[in-house]
Image (cartoon, rainbow, N blue to C red; front, side):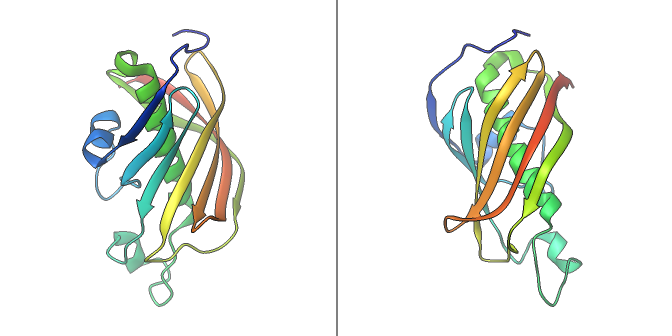
Amino acid sequence: MNEQVAVTGTLESADITRIMELIPHRYPFLMIDKVVDIALDHSAVGIKNVSINENYFQGHFPRQPVMPGVLIIEAMAQTAAVLVTTTLAGEADGKLVYFMSVDEGRFRRPVVPGDRLHIHVAKIRNRRNVWKFKGEAKVEGVLVAEAVFAAMIMDD
């Protein structure tokens, strides 16, 4: 792969059907419903509508349902994977995006059913097949979680 991807531009959004074409995740582990404001090779915003019907609420504080923080981080990673596969276009065919590291993870407030997560991811850098991102999750403009994470693009 190239040292730096030279693709630039903006794609308005990717709906759930397009997301499932770009990344292999499926229910119950698909953590984003839509990706908007995709700036190729730069940033994107994932949207997750948090519903009480999510299977993890059955066992994660059932009397006080809270979305697990690790799943918020996973939503960041899936948003970044959509950004990467969209940026790489055909170069990403037959490849998967794997987590390598998560750093500086912070959880600011609980995410509960009825919340709408806006997951902002921005590329910090990429070298060959390794990409590093800064992610922030917000509900109604309020920061609820953040992390820096890296992922590797590999053959499926």
